[in-house]
Length: 389
Ligand SMILES: [Zn+2]
Ligand SMILES: [Zn+2]
Image (cartoon, rainbow, N blue to C red; front, side, top):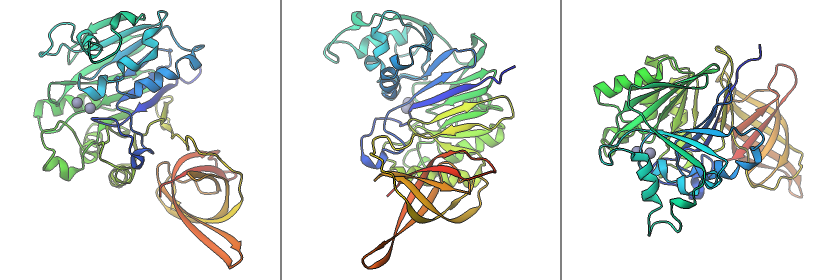
């Protein structure tokens, strides 16, 4: 029997409001939107932040495999989780069918999510109204504690602690369990338990990591968000295997998210920081989670051959140093052949040497590992790095 595979794409990972600040481009500036394709082909979208627009723009390219039905799980109604809806092109094509799931807000009453749609497109906030959205739309109201199935997949929703309410989702597929717990703050006993129930034994546990532990104790207490430390503690307590730090603060530069990830990795083995364009695949139970980061997006690459010394950290966490050659260089990144297998999302120091008129010159750059290909015991692996400064 073939191994069941589930594929999780991160289209938006930023919390609160989109960012276009150049210091945030590496992790990305779009607000929450994830896409999960289950082994049976069930197509799920988690939240409708601004990342949804990008997903919609890629829709036709994958039309051959695209199922006719998509199920959209919405965590709550804060702007950053619904803002992508009017800009999601597939909603304007009549062949598409969408099933939306969310809770009845006590502030909106019945049909909460349908009302959110209408309000976003009401005059004078948007140029056209709902009547031009020709895709079929069905709305299902769900409650915390509820379990339902879509195809072969079991979905459970649980309340998490967030102003005006928020649902976390647990999706159990034959390839493994993905838990999406955005926007939650620790400190409410009952809801902390609810989060643990949600995350129990998850293969991938995506948790709010907007603030630092220090911010969470002081200025940002009560804002409804969490930290890397809380994610690590919950992952440990409930046996989650891989933790994904999510909902990065709009004021967190890439450097700051790097530091948050570094702290989390000192405390827990398998951690990633959610990054726009990141793809995670889940195989059969027991297989490690595979992650792929987006490479340089726009850079013009040039073939190059520079001698270089590379210092970094291996997958196993050991520091290494290696003499090699840099190939395929751009202003943003490079491809380097290495015998070592550096850890994804770790830092590499690349010192390149060239002989100029004044003798040999060295240039040192800090790169960030976005790809490791051909990582086997035989032969070198091709390591993609993006230069961080
Ligand atoms: Zn949010
Ligand atoms: Zn929120």
